[in-house]
Image 1 (cartoon, helix red, strand yellow):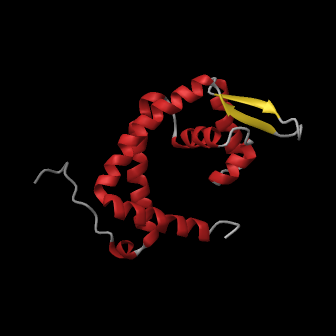
Image 2 (spheres, one colour):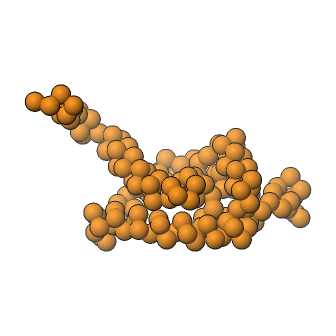
Image 3 (cartoon, one colour):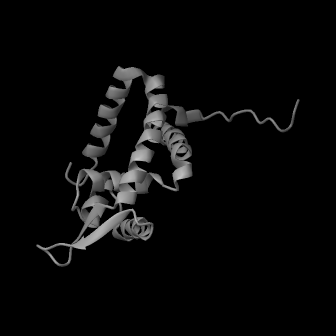
Length: 153
């Protein structure tokens, strides 16, 4: 027997735990996502921030952080990195001088377009595993889980 081949571990009671399977599936999707956008020098969180800015021009980093469930320090670091790369623009709000409104720079919009193309291929791989109805049902189930656990839920 080849000593370099390690048989998979038995997972015991983990097999019946929802959280375990969610974590394993999340890790599989995250690995594929990271590989899909690796050449763009973009993380999942950075992509999510660009998407939210594109969908909500003028939103603040606090608004985006709340939507993503990200703390202020992490959100500031993400926004600083995107800003340093010239992907977003910050503008002080005319209504509230403490608030910085975010929008996409041309480079950010271009990068987002390229990322969306790669992510569409990534999504297609998982839709193929689940099928249209399975994907729709899974998305609805996942939404119910995190919305039930949100501060407003």
